[in-house]
Image (cartoon, rainbow, N blue to C red; front, top):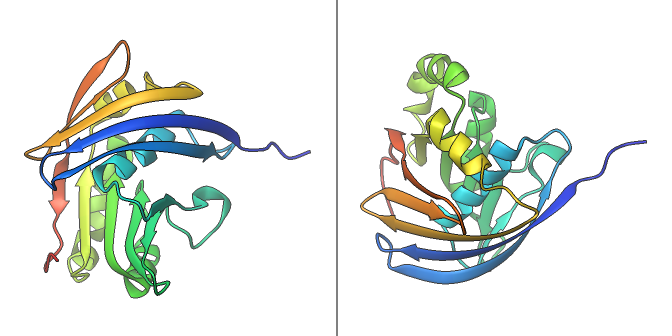
Length: 184
């Protein structure tokens, strides 16, 4: 018998001073049996970075060809495609062909550097791609905040992200590996 997804509830209060975006979001996030708590929290962090009424979680690990998150406009076109992890070049090219903007939040420092060094040349050819990396300590700090029912406050200013729950606070400085060539 196959294991089912575990459902997490998160109430996130986002104050993004960089984009002038403020809101309170109530999320229901399914965690695939093969997904780690670290990756779950990175999907929530990715949501917080681009929070908006049209941003939603994809089926991700359970469905090949779908992102961790995406934003779809009124016409059904994909505006943003957001991946978490170290996807292969073929997958990123496919995402770029289907969407207006592609973002990757890369993690796992043991895999990250070899992945980046072997793919950076090909990624550089994709003008609508931005790639950021998050350190292992920050990933572990986020994982310590996991609960089945979470209440998080996320503040973003000058590229720095502060995430806090009732007992902990974490400052995250993402390392930009590649920025989109033509920002909108």
